[in-house]
Amino acid sequence: MTSRRLLLTLLVVVTGALVLAPIASADLWSPESGGSPNADDIDWLYKFVFAVAIIVFVGVEGVLLYSVFKFKARKGAVAAQIRGNTRLEIGWTVGAAVILVILATLTFVKLDDIRNPPDSGPDGLQLADTSRRLPPNGKSLNICVNGQQYIWRYTYADDCRTGKNLGAPFAYEEMVVPVNTTVTLDIGSQDVAHSWWIPKLGGKFDAIPGYTNHTWFKVPGKFGLKPGGTVFFGQCAELCGRNHANMTARVRAVSVDEYQRWLEQRKTDIKAAEEAAAAERKKLDSSTTQTP
Image (tube, rainbow, N blue to C red; front, side, top):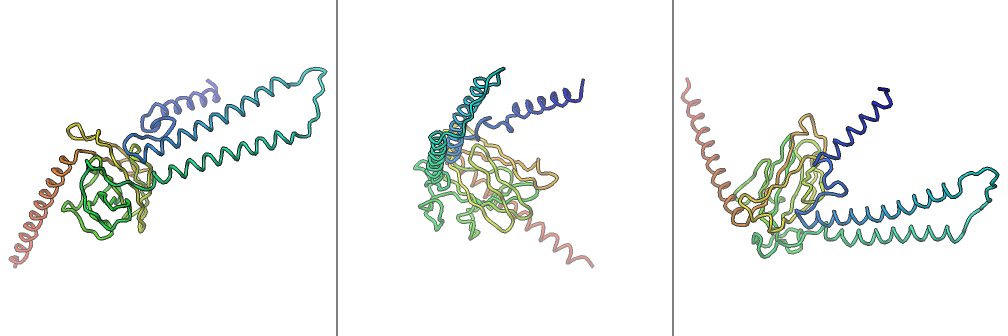
């Protein structure tokens, strides 16, 4: 086998492996969606831009191929000397400008829904108004997302800026949220740059030391109907060190009742752990004091 054929075979194999890999291919032609309204808007925008690009591509390539075969060199034929066509040049300039205006307009229309979270639904977790600027009326479950080599820590807080929590200070790896509830995330890092990414719940946001990024999602109620809820998987999307590939993330969307039971259990577990740690410290202090 020649080196050229070997290279071509390797290219086909690698391309096929990437296309068939579910995580690498996502929705293949567009970002994943279905888990949150902002993810759906991002997906729709990608698909619209892709459709316009296909139309432009087919049109341009069609004219190119037609011209190549229609006006290819022939024996004895003399090519016409054409200096330009003013109407044609004005036409494709105006056409390109119109396409850009349409894309820009739709992008800005959708951008408002993508960036600005709505309030939680009537069937979601009922939260008191806070001073948060997101969402409009401040009704959201605020979770602080902290990236660290090589795990995610989630702190459940009324407001990440004050540090006030709900009695369940933190959880690792898996974030549990109620459905029909707007969840606002304050994303940061305590060591190096990471990137929070749950594809079905919207775009990815970098976790940067000393800086806080904000995003949100709102999982529809249908995902909380089955026992145990629905799990959305993600991955750190920024090369952050030797164990970067192991820095996975999970969001479990459950019913409001199941979320409240989980929260109460977290409170109980954390209180028990703190009491056990205090008892061990007291025992250690006593043994240290008694040692001659």
